[in-house]
Structure formats: structure tokens, C-alpha cells
Image (cartoon, rainbow, N blue to C red; front, side):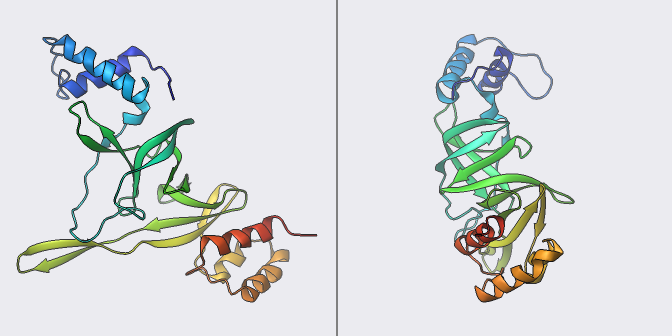
Length: 244
């Protein structure tokens, strides 16, 4: 994971982190260069001289006492992320389904864990909870992360979301995140299309194959509202790699 970046990027990070480079256009203060050197050393020891992992923005979320916006768990678990073609392993990650953001947790110079949103434009894909995700650009929506079911062409993926609900109570306003909801997405030629029904799925295939696909879906009782990864994976294997 060691990969050197030019010193100015590391120095910029260190100056911002230690407070010697304000974000207001003021001149850099240099009264304590030792603190800057310590920050550089800490950065190199923690992140292998690679600023990409911290090339993001601060993360905040609406607090809910009874729920969370994340994929499966509210904990940051070691995962893998690919940023601009570079793979980073054992990085504490979580996926916010409400904001549709990938969040990294890093240890600040003060020793406190802090969350950071990774820019979608840099994230090629990631793995968390043992599940792989890829970024796709959806027309009219922008970049989104899709869970990989079968990563081929055509491929099958899941798009996950959560809603935030507001509850007005006598003691004040509270918030609750809803259950995770997902849509099946078929990607052909790099173009993602949400398919929420058998009819929509069959429509995305060549006319000469549609009758056989419709029959397979009926025979195997596949309904896209609740079909699981195993069912969807077997379906794509059948369609992409038909037996003689």
C-alpha cells in the first residue's frame, strides 16, 4: 500500500491538520515546524505517504437513537476500497444508504477516530461486510454504488437506499431511519437500468430470447421485489452461460 506522493500534498495535509494553514487565504504560520514534521511522520506511518485516502470532506449525519443509515451495521469494519485504480485494504469503512456516501474512518493526529466522505468520482469500488460494490454513472442521477451480484456484461447488481423519517413528539423532534430497500439493476454495455418486475427485466433482452427468459422466471418463481442474491446469480449464470 506504500505509494509516494509529492511532498507538497503531504505538506499541505500536515499544515491543514496541525492548523498552520488556515482555509481563509491567510499566510502560513511557521512558529512550530516540529509539529508539522510530526504530522508528516504520523501521516506516512498511518497511510503510506498516500493522500488519496484523506482526499474527502467531513461527514455528518442526522442522529437517531433507534436506527442508523448504514448498510447492515452501524460499525466501521475493515474493508477494501479502490481509489483511482489504487487498492487499499483493511480500511475502516461504512456505506451510508441515506446519503449514498462511502465513509472512511481514520485516526486523527489527536488520536480520535473521525469519519470522512470519500469523493464518488475517485471511488472505483469497495468491499464491506464481505460484499462487493462498484460505482456506476447513471444518467440523470450521477454516480451510484451498486452491490455486485454478477460482474459481467450483462451484469446484475443491487442498489440500496434508506429513508429518514421525522417524528414530532412532546419532548422534541426525533428521527428514524427506515429499513434498507433495494432495486435490481441490470447493466448492459455499461448502462444501468433498474428492473422492478419480470416484464421490465425481459424487455432488456433481445426479442428472440424473451420467450425463454419469461418461461425460466415463471418456472423458478423469481420475483424481482424479493429475489435474493443467490436466485439472481443463478438467473444470470443461466442467461450468460447457457448449458448446451
